[in-house]
Image 1 (tube, helix red, strand yellow):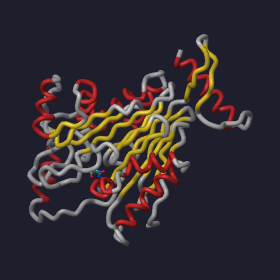
Image 2 (image 1 turned 90 degrees about the vertical axis):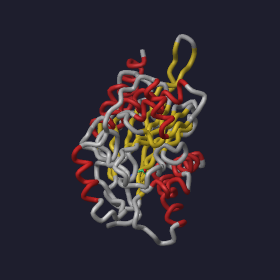
Image 3 (image 1 turned 45 degrees about the vertical axis):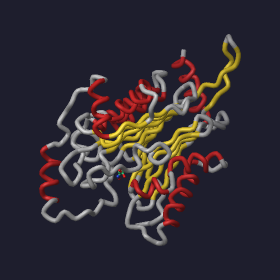
Length: 328
Ligand code: SD4
């Protein structure tokens, strides 16, 4: 049923691209036996060019699956990939050599869950979802989060790969803390999804800044900073220097800017400008925001060039470089 409606919408969208029908928004009013309902053409976007993760989420959405499942299953692909050293298994450790993971998830009813500083579990996003669904809480941290993960039956795993350990040992020779401005195509994954029912969801997961102080938590698992979803407006997520995103409650800000009528790109640009204003000319860090509104429109903005987002929708898939404040 969902799939049929989605395919119908896809056909409408294609007709619009070809100039045979006006494409006003992704939402279509459809007559059903019980009245009128809104159906949508699904969309998924994620920070950077995480093709496999986005494809996974799209496989859920294009079959009529829900936005929350799509976001969780999508980012799990990166969590399980040891070659990505900024998320999940194989993530770079803190300065004490321990991989600690942060993640959050949010649905279109404003339910949310998060784990911070989780050690020994490959899928913090799934633990975050259990926090959301099985507890009266939103956030669990450190040992408490690990205890909860164990109790929920998640398997324990050593997350420190040989490669990440070798690099950490090398780093210790100087122990200089210099976050890399851009890690092209390999960075924190924030994913935003819109399903056939018009429901939005999002997930964000990371190992955080490499060689961070033990106990440091960035923006990624902080609802409103690294991720925010508002059922009436849209959703936003962030990557980059978490401290700066937290100071502006970045993703919440972007959703509120969309509420005021800004397009996703305009809202992301304003969010980046707010951060820059607070830093009075300092630009030696990266911030990248992406956003998806209720109509399926997407956009992003960043400080340094080379940030992009991958998108899957009824028109296919593409990697979209986003405009940046600095041009080189
Ligand atoms: C953090 N925002 O922990 C994350 C990390 C990140 O580019 O996105 N790095 O601050």
